[in-house]
Image (cartoon, rainbow, N blue to C red; front, side, top):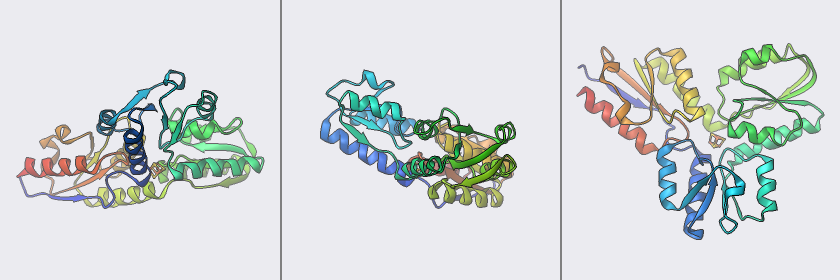
Length: 281
Ligand code: SF4
């Protein structure tokens, strides 16, 4: 096979919010021994296994958390009802919510205080979106252009955006919403780490013959990066790790770009690059 140039995006590895949450979780486990976590702290199986080894115990319901075990709230934010229940049960709360997610909560409150119907552009059911929605009265969640097209006209509305949304998707939805609302205010809460990754991904997808996106299939932001890449470069593949790589992908290719979701550890990205290099040698 021909020699292959491999370019890894500048920003790979945990984003600032995920790194912070993982550090908080590890420190809490050192301090308390066992710490409860409601669901996965980040959408990455390797990270979750490491944390479980360190003493983090995953529960699905706040009522199942033992009374003497502190509970850690995840980087994507936590619904108001869960905060309330944890307070009622007098549990020790360790808050690992990303400060940029907290900014979305604040932005949505500003819009609500202006008497606007708050629209969240994001994935229904995603932890972050549910967390923002739980602080609002009758918010509207719009995931795609069809959702925007089906929206009834509104007099006064405000938009916030899930931190990891694709800039292109949001632009299309907002383009439709301005035809639906008379008074529309948009606070663009896509976070800076996400914007940077998307920009770098677009450049790599345009320049390279093959694109590999590294990250869990349960990670919304990784799937989004894969979809952005796929729209620009048909030879875009998502992998969870080096074992998912197929030599056939590189037939006739001379360059490969590698990007990764915000919750993918950098070591896995480096392993994917190494395996790719070895496969084509
Ligand atoms: S993707 Fe952005 S908002 Fe989400 S955890 Fe990372 S830095 Fe925070």
